[in-house]
Image (cartoon, rainbow over all chains, first blue to last red; front, side, top):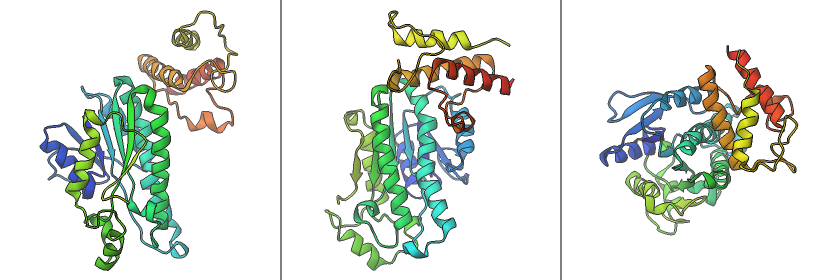
Length: 226
Length: 92
């Protein structure tokens, strides 16, 4: 079983659909459940630990344990650091960082029982580039990267690998409000200077699902290079 | 109500796989003189989680209540036993 958070749209949806196409049993988690999705969906607020615990209780009853967790749920808020509303900062940190932590805390024990598992958490190129206007978003994702590296060490003895994927600007809802010239300036700082797609990100996630990637853990994979 | 105290002690003994290590309620689980590494501590929690299901409650290893008292429930076998029993009492 593959669990994908943020599965109702954006990268989460693309990843969930990719694994469905490949014949996997996908359970998509999201705040709003959509009826037109080609996979099972469960409503959850990843930033609320009790909501996450309730979902995990349900997942425990499935025949197959989760083999792969993709934490793609995330929100962005573009503001200069000094002008970012406190509520907005809090929501970004709660969803991106705490949501990732709560999901890992809850799903990893199921993987430990199975003796195998892989977790992919989502970061961003904004961490490496310290992009102006994305301080709270970048800080939350920097937290995700550090949490993931630490978790990788703590879970390695249990046969579980943990990695991050850090895309550049991908055409999803998160880019709403970012102008084409801003996107170009970011792309120009990538090693491969072109804007990648959701499909490219799915390819990287698929690589990390492959059993041949079992030696990779505690790493941050930058789509396009940085 | 069935007491879980002895079972916790027994699980620690099983996980240690070393009869020469004397364990009792005062034995430190973690820290400088702790008898468990992080891997076996997680395995102990999973075993207690299973046992709790049999007993009809959920064992919460991340209990805010237990940790907010300023002293980790994982410091000794006794403190973990007490927390396990306390959670059972609250739930049943």
